Length: 497
Image (cartoon, rainbow, N blue to C red; front, top):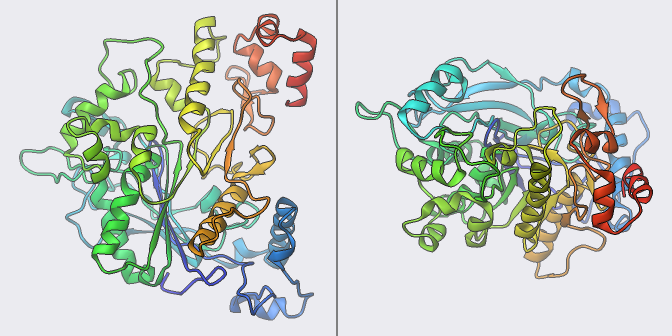
């Protein structure tokens, strides 16, 4: 992790957090980039003997502006041809390491930490797990989901997936990054700063865990970085929104003003909308999000970004909802959000159990997509497919889903390039490189590249029409609402229009 890593002369590190089930932190190093004097992609020393006996390949990035997807397919195939045995030759298991500062801990006082793999690349991810907001449900959580509150049973190794994968066929842009996976064990959406004491049964130190990891990484090469990417999924996605500015401010306070901090928030853009069905049950899942957050921030002793705190003084719970905190964030953040997020539907008391939904539920689901789309319209860098799912960037299919013909890895690559161009005072985005991508079709899974849906009772895969009919979709009524013939609507659905 102490090696310098360059992409067109820029050193990158990536840090990733997780929300409900996962999160991460790490550094990344790219292959295939070049500086202006070097057009040929050179193999690492580890593989150089083998590569020099085979055909060499010239990679000229200036010639591919109009057909980046095709170019990246070639790069992916090239990586596989050059390194077909990479998974066997290198040990890609991430090894468990605990923080040296043991005062920064999980809920039960066990030391926080994460899994690390020292590759020629860098990245990190944290498992998500929602949160608890009083002694009763924290006690219950500790009995039933102790892995989300304690490090005592963490395994010695982990294997990264999606954007954390070390395999080029799964992760064409960042497969050779140094990776740090930070488990979520603070139950506070990465916002707490309260230690375990005789009066406090649990520690809530999520914000301090992130800062402590960053400080320790400074001793392992981060101090030489130009760019730090803080990323996270679910609770970690919200954690990114809460911590991207504080992490940047921490680095500035420590004298590392050369490091640009950026954020990547996946599936953490929650709405404080009215639930489909209100209940009297005050638990984490069924209660209105605003109510449990209000209770949680008092219990955790939370820390929210200063600009958001000033904007919502006395009502800091607003800072946990993406569309409210985002306008207060100074550092660039890329938003990844399913328009029909399963976790959002769950907290709104829409439980998809495999039975056809009622008409009121169907309308609620459609309206959720419209509401999410509306809150994202002014976000300059984002990727929002009209799919029913939760979490994205660590899924094995994260390279397959497209919005308007562009995949998420390409959109992130374009975003990275656009920020580099901006730093050179070139305000126009790279030609043919979109970063504002949102589906306009109105139904869950109307995007034909959405992840596969399976019938919960049979396990069989369903196509779009089967899925919508399974959900109680009325073709006749929907066609009438859209002002078209039912057969035409079915044809559009079948073709993925």
